[in-house]
Length: 143
Image 1: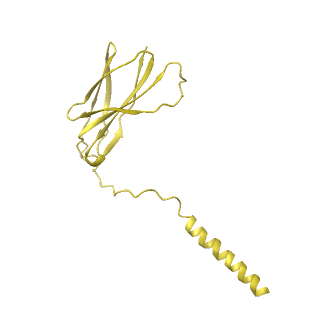
Image 2: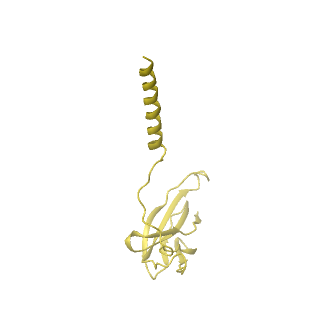
């Protein structure tokens, strides 16, 4: 009887130890390719806009960084979010991809609708769905 009780306790301790080994690894994410220094696309910068009546022209710059981002983009994706002036200032909003611009162009024309706050940002795109970080976001209030 005593041996059976000791065997049960040992099997419980071993089971807990085995479970803790497998559960302690944490959640695994999808495999990622190795990052090679410089094999990235630099983010667009200096995003600006000009407003002519209801038409907005977005313009930005892009440069290759010889140390950290040597890949030249094929084009740029334009992202926009909008919300009314009545919505709360801290309410979340979702960016949608509204257009693509091919290189070498770094301008985009869009017609605004009155009564909205618009948010724009740009992302460089390369071969094999390679993407840069986003540019800084700009806000346009069009009353």
